[in-house]
Amino acid sequence: MKNYFPLLFLILTTLQGQIERVEPPFWWEGMEEKKLQLLLYDQNIATLEPRVSGMQLVEVKRTENSNYLFLYFDLSDQKPGTFTIELYQKGQKKRSIPYTIKSRSDLVRKESFDASDVIYLLMPDRFANGNPDNDSHPLLTDKQNRADQDGRHGGDLEGIIQHLDYLQELGVTALWSTPLCEDNDAQVSYHTYAQSDLYKIDPRFGTNWDYKRLADELHQRDMKLIMDYVTNHWGVEHWMIKDLPTSDWIHQFEKYTNTNHRKEIHSDPYASEIDRKELLQGWFVPSMADLNQSQPLLLDYLIQNAIWWIEFAGVDGFRVDTFPYNNPKPMTLWLEAIRKEYPNFNIVGEGWMHNTVHLSYWQENSAVAAIQEFNSKLPSVMDFTLNDAIVTAFKEHNDYWEHGMTRIYKNLQNDFLYPNINKVLIFSENHDTNRINDFYPDFKTYKRMMTVLMTLRGIPQIYYGTEIGMTGKKENGDGAIRKDFPGGWSSDPQNAFKDQGRNSIQKKYFNFTKKIVNWRKTQPAIHFGKTLHFVPQNDVYVYFRIADDTRVMVVVNNSLENQTLSLDRFSEGIEGKKKGWEVLTEQTVDLEKSLKINAETAYIIELN
Image (cartoon, rainbow, N blue to C red):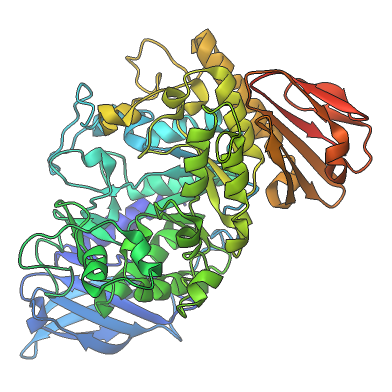
């Protein structure tokens, strides 16, 4: 069967080559949404009249650009098979296009990522080069240059697939890769957020079938694949941006206008219309054209493209880039359409905001958004406010007012603003931030930080290379925080994917991370349990995660002094337990009267 699909795709590509583009390249019967938009693109194709046998054509839409023809079909009673779309001019047949409707695969997964998972974020160009033959491509501008920190280094899908055993050993259960669709920017194209073709994996990463193979390999390991999806913008090299279907396909000003990046405008009761317009319609950067999601043809295109990747590859979830920069009303339709097909499909939106009120506004059923009679329909958001606390708290060794552990404690006090706190994605770093190991260049701090990240509510995400102590400062350029994983290239002097290839420091980081991540997989109280916490004293933060008869006590001593805790204060959480098992040191601890904990140390104590 694996050999059949690439052959079918080759046949269809050859046949459909009679016109320049047919998107989506194929579809499925039995979908919840019975409408199908088919985009045909070729020189003056709108001058032709379509006739279709075997499919019910219900609407033909033309735009001011005669190179586009949008056909809408009703698939309510559609049977699978290959059918013919014929294009006529003055009664004479000019083109004949075969189009395939497939049977839906029963391999489409019914679950998605949730708080039982630990997500591993990687940038494919910087992770591992499994196929050196695709490092550059003759039709794409940016060529491989590993010496340039902003150039393409050659990492690809094959490199990821070859190292899935490493990720499985580490204990992560979900993989989030930054975008993989084609990006034909002349520079920094490895970033891949300025995509130029939404139906094609960038050939420098591999093929669509390689992406499907990655999903299949992950699923065989009971792991999940999260796709990084971009609805706000396309690259200026996108083939549709170079020949716009409609004048309102993208937002355009008399002169170039950048977004003001003031995402809080959505929930600001006093926001001006000019500020709102600049936020939503200004371009993210000059190389990324801002899409107008209110354009009905475009919205249908974005909905179908997202569903196509889920159905084709078996994607388990989305992370949506720059979510608040989109027009919120059509985006609710985009979300509803996806969740209509896949009710349990999780989607997390990036909203880089530093106030829980504004951030929680974006989660589905937010009471804050309800004041404005808005409901985003977005299941999950990224907890940037907790990230702010984490990257500051561990270098402050006192809890005066909002310092040290009190930062994290006070951040959690705002959790009531989230309709579903267990779905919030939590992190200490990602591909846009400083490397946490550069921010905190010592192993003791890493252990405390990782202990907190792996025991708090929500869905934890770690960034590739953190687990071996990789460093990088954003002030030295984005390439500095996106270095190559050592061992991902055959010419690398060391291979940190293997135990024998790691130096002593890398082994410390990896072994600790592996231990705590694999332990987390076994703890339902950490996944979905409630939280009970206590005001930090002397920069010691104590909290419990509780589910049914399972209790986990977390003690974080962030101070520079050893501490002795009187346990009477925590009796509500300890609930009469006399002893516990400390996970990190693998020792039994006495919980009857007091607990001693060394400076700059964290404990995870199982009480059940």
